[in-house]
Length: 505
Image (cartoon, rainbow, N blue to C red; front, side, top):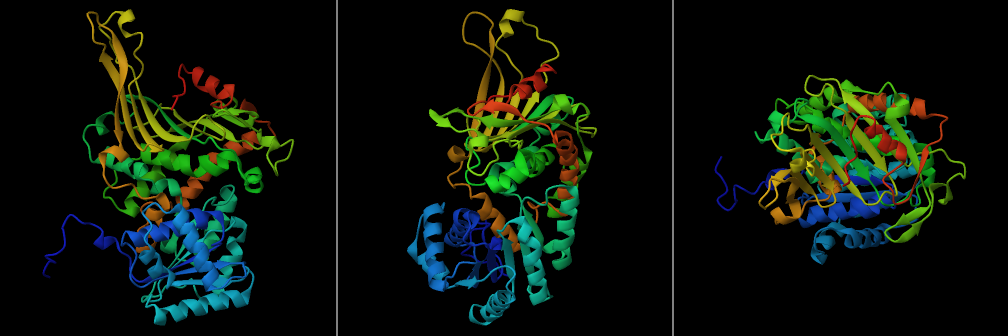
């Protein structure tokens, strides 16, 4: 086959354009759709990564027509888009925007949705291909999935594909996640289910694989012979906002620890896959998740906390129990920290410290490998008083990049060794801005690339880690910490008991 002389062989976008298709978003008027999904659709179109034959369908209870929905979509995309606004790009998209009004138990509304999809095959040439995004509360999944099964919208055939995107949380414990997985897999085939964890769409998380497996520099020391401990932190400076109803039932461990942080742990600890494919990467991640051990002494090594009134960025922040919609005697945690082990040859004996919390001093997500001290220092003790552990820190957000911390001599006439840092920042090194996580993940769904999406076995293995912790915490009161602090004192004591301390991001 002759090559295209006008195409730059270094341009890898062309193979990443999906087939003609439609994207159907349930709950299109919600925050997630307005702030993330609609802007992501526009940004993909602006980058030339959507097929010419593409349609966007919204489904919600609002009594709107196509015009009102198109205006909402336009304002949401324009306000939150990552790429520059171009009216001609939106005009092309707007010609393919439809809206179906109805509730999730309304048979007529789903019949109309199915009819719209069938009609778009002729008017927009989408070829019958469609991805369904469930941007709705998990309690509504069964109703929507059963409607899709009833109308035949979920059926893939040799001539068309149908895929579904499921937002977290995937259940609220191991049993409920198994029931949810069984339901989803009974309507869609396993290969057509995309469980979305937006953290896996972040460039820095994907760079973790490149960092490890494309470089000989790091892999020889990426193990328990050289690494003293691993710290994975997801800190938020905001409170719960208007999510009290969701958060009261969920808490920090179920909301973040079970998915985001355990997925980051799996990517950090996994072995090299045989090839860079979805199946092989998920195989290695699953091995890690099944090898995770929960501490026996949970009273010491599993800490949860709840923020009280305090000060953050110079402003007074209310306590969790004073937030609107929260019970005044709530025992829901807004902070969780735990010491886990990974029982493999590579990581045996290395503690993995995971923590997440709200109303912490700053918003940051990072993975820090803290290395052991050199076995022998031929210097006087006073020469190395300022020398700490070598560290490799991968910053997932914000200021995406990497920091390598090591010892260096201070200029002068005496030998003094002190910690210095080398920084790599994505924003400075590359001219192209990193796509938003949802931008990348939506594109992968339309392409059928499941590399960054956990399978149900991974979800269930993660719940097998969290359930014992939740059982231990049941009926207990979380430690308190002031808004603007790095969590409760008990979390500091957890590391201090083993002669370690938390990194200050």
